[in-house]
Image 1 (cartoon, rainbow, N blue to C red):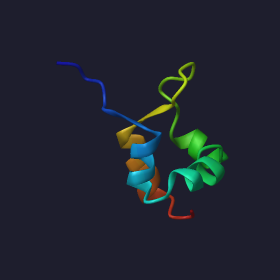
Image 2: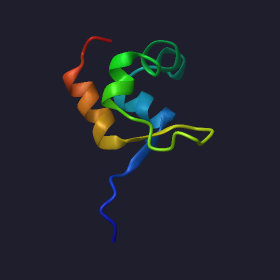
Image 3: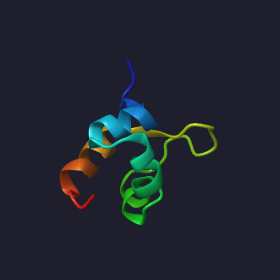
Image 4: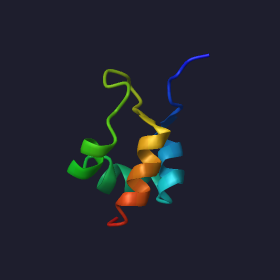
Length: 65
């Protein structure tokens, strides 16, 4: 048993945020707010992963998108 929080990929992050993958890639993923609040857990990987908790917190606190 580990204490790591579950991670989600880009598609799951889009589902949590309620946005399409294209919208996420063009408007959210590279925004300063998202990068500051939801760090990429695998920066050198081909596909980014994010902590599910961070994405949910971002959704709840930032209804600006």
